[in-house]
Amino acid sequence: RRTVVIDCDPGTDDAVALWLAMASPEIDLRLVTVAGGNVGLDLTLANARAVTGLAGRPVPVVGGARRPILGEYRSETNVHAVNGIGGITLPEGPPAAPGIAADAIRALLRDAAPGEVTLIGLGPATNLALALAPEPELFSRVREIVLMTGAWGEGNWTPSAEFNAASDPEALAMVLATGLPVSLVTLDLTAQALVTPEVIANLREAGSSRCLATACDVLAAIPRSKRFNGRGTPLHDPCAVALVLWPELFTCREVSVTVECGEGPGRGRTHVDRWNRTGRQPHVTLAETLDAPTFFSRLGARLATLP
Ligand code: BDR
Ligand code: CA
Image (tube, rainbow, N blue to C red; front, top):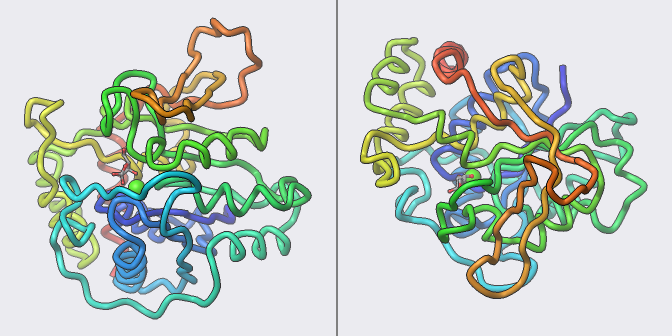
């Protein structure tokens, strides 16, 4: 079993990612940390508590960054609705655990064995950056950092930048600068995990659990993307959890990645050097292709095991 921390901003797809992690015996989810992202921190924290509560798996949920390290906080309510979770009302979850996300992550690392902890980042990288920066001695406890962020092709927040990367480019740069092994799930990968009405219908068929039904309601509430001619919407964050669970469904390549931190139209752009044009030493494992039908069928089977 892998010791896992999920840092997130639920978020419709974050919610499904949390349910997938909690439904998976391979993952020992020890901590959920939350940042303001898709919606403000008060809502993302309430959503994370509600999502973990619905799954009936006790896990500490700790709030963290309300805003990026530099710059302004901006929400993404077009996709996730004003409550961050597709307008679906979930029963109130257990209270948040005390403390601040970055401290909670460091405390967990301090108690961990060398190479034990997998950090999965599904929102702006602020909490992870603030956790890792002050205590490089703790880096040895990290097995890998798996991030849903960035794009090698076009962005979804600006023409060139993906939402999580654009929300806090400095934080992402800090996480990349740790030199820890990073696995990256970008928009180019998640475009292959398109949630269409047929995908939702198949998921509903997978079982009768309340979490599965709620996940399907949440997915059905997301507006279908213009970019995919209204066929569906990519299921971003669960792909990062799937990369931990089922690496055999992905093909990957070693690359170097830098993130643009300047002001200007490229802010938050990830430069993904897939062909080693820079000559930089690759330090990121980039997920490039996904066996989406198997992913969706395993996702349904897992969510069906929750209450
Ligand atoms: C990412 O941004 C958020 O809107 C999603 O939850 C996902 O983490 C995709 O760009
Ligand atoms: Ca997210």
